[in-house]
Structures are given as C-alpha cells and as structure tokens.
Image (cartoon, rainbow over all chains, first blue to last red; front, side, top):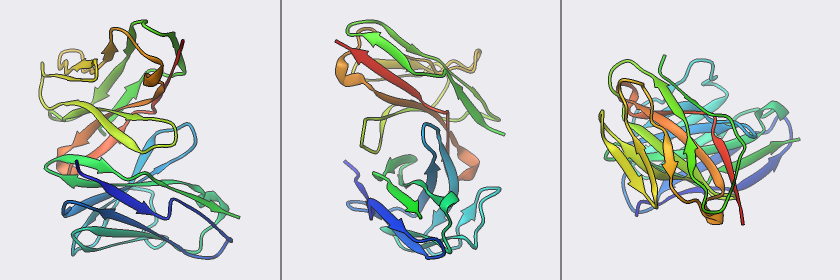
Length: 113
Length: 113
C-alpha cells in the first residue's frame, strides 16, 4: 500500500525559531500533497494544498508567510513554521494524493516553548 | 461552503454491541464521502469510501451508504470489538480543490469487554 512518512515525529522548539517538517511519499509519486493541522480533541483543518513545481494554495486564514510550503519533488513536500510561537503548537499532518485518494502521514507533534 | 457534521462523542459500547455514528454533509455538487479511523498513537487510515449516491462502502465489518436524499453517510457496524476503539472521522472531498478533504470533528469510540 501507499506509505507516507513524516519527519520529525515530534519536535520541541523555542519561541521565535523556525521548524521544518518533511512529508515523503515512499512508494509512489504525488503531484499534490496536503497539510492539515489538528488541535487536541478536534478535527483536522486543511491548511494548504501543495502542488509539485508550483506555489501552494492556502486556505483562508492561514498565513502563507508563516507557514512556508515547498513541494520541490514528486515525493517530498516541506512545511516550515517560521518564527514559531506557543499558539503554533499543534499536531501537523500531511497527506499525499494518488488516484483521488489521500494517504496520510503519521503526523508531527510541534511544541513551542 | 462544503462541510461535514458528525455526532459528538465519546461513544462507549460493550463488545458485540451495534454501532452507528451519524454523519451529514453540506456540499455543492456530488462529493466523494469517506470514513477515516485514527487508532491511538497512529495516523489516519481510510476505512471506507463512496463516490456517488447509493454507493455502499464497506470494510472490516463497517458499512456506510451515500444517501443523497438525506445528505448522510452514517457509519455502522453490527458487532463492535475492543480493537475498534479509535476516533472516527467523516470527510468529504472537494473536487474543485484538488480533492482536499473537509473533515467532521471526529467521534471517539471506546469499546469495553
């Protein structure tokens, strides 16, 4: 089956620093990847759609300058949280699309102190 | 906009009980509908899906039927097991947004022996 990995699985950083999260499709190519954010005991909220070779499409209310997305290859998308603050602490989940189905990574727990 | 509403949890059932988790949707057009499951400490996994009205998705004893007349996609299982304890998310795919997913808030299910 299609496997998507995320790295790191857990990261703790200081306020004001930047953190990069990687999302990789391991056994398939994905022209489209998605980034979601999940708050405790809540649903996943789509942050942006990442398209290989082009700019990401951000959902309303998501700051594109704060959440930088790069999809430089067909198997890798990165999300960089710039100048992180405690309110950015959350669970970030990526997915990769293959034939109109999405395959999800295991998520990255970000804690900003 | 497109949205999904699912019943609030947590739901606690005894083993072998019947399960229903309600899900209704609001959408323009005819979206594909999904149920995802998130086991403790793991990423989201696709449980089942339906792509058009009257389709029935099924997997691992779970079923859901795409009802256009009631805009519903309720999840059912005739006899739950302790291993079914997880969080269940109803979702719809937005065909005009690269099939990004809109999720319901999730329903936590606990099955006791």
